[in-house]
Length: 471
Image (cartoon, rainbow, N blue to C red; front, top):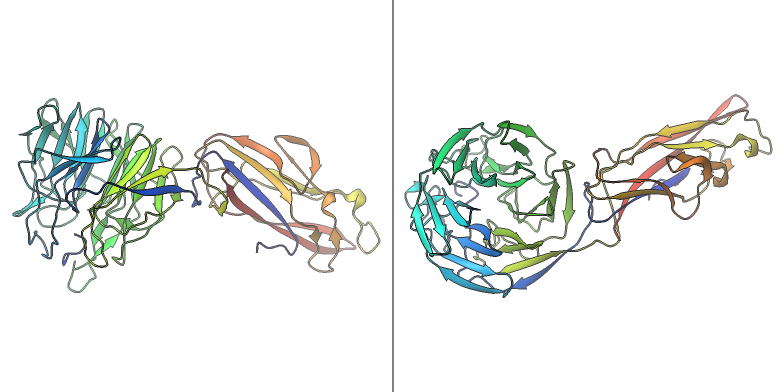
């Protein structure tokens, strides 16, 4: 298992900037997944493998009793294989694996399923077995070079990549090995930069993303008694056989269930560093922009559960409740909806937004001493995984910080790519710019406008507040 014991600042002027997206955003934004219960698993289990083939979810192996041992199961894993049909909301049982095991991975290639690694009663395994759903039979294939459990896997171009995990000494490894089902051969590949177990991996756009996981805490007493969760994300390119670090996930956690919908990686039911599972929100990684979002939490606590996606819907099943160690047989279906309302987001807005004062109409204490306008420009950057629109609107007048002078907001104007002629800030949204998916960073911009008169400087400040509005 997991341990070896196993107000917006309005004093001057505030300008709210809204980023409208069709679905989601790269920052930590509020979104909605509607979760509902489905037919339970015939056999409640945890630490099993899930894989989708022909629109059906296969739940393979795992543990159906509590494992209280430190390194190997106190009770044996199971070889059970059960199949969930998402169209009929029903389960069936097919031929069991020849080798009972848990903490394995499974992948589907060319209409067949490959069960790889895991642990059995004698320790960690290198076993590879192939299942043919047409004949409902299993065949033993070439063993994985490195025996491992709690590893991750993904498929690119018909080849299976076995990534990380725990070796036979229960230590984390960075090992990556490629299996060719056609040739029935294994090839060593470049190690991950970060050794870890309990990670998850998914393939998007021909690249593999290894997310989260854990390492043993070397400072624990006794040593290695507990594990430390990671927020590490690393991308593997099979063509160049190389790894690249990516934006960490918001939560340090391992043991994620994960699935891919519309080229976004959904991770759920993770395990945090204090070893208290979670009602963690579903965290979503968008590889195209190297950014993260957050969506509605699952409704039931579960650890080392199975995850899958079929026809754009998410499924999570089984697992174990970390509070009472009750094994789950429940299944939840998640329908990804469009969010309503707004939420703060870590994002800046692109392009430049120019703010300046119209000196001809400014009056301070009954006089107009200004001879020229003062223009302040700030550049921000969109981070959106969908088409976006940037708008601005006024929330109040500009008030000086020293003498309390008021500059009517009608004297504050802006220009932008869609507003080449200076326009007044209005109380309703005014379009600044729009675009498609892009890359960026940062959260807010604080800036000051300085207006000079009678040799006295007065500072005028404003906060940009970034809000996601999802219709």
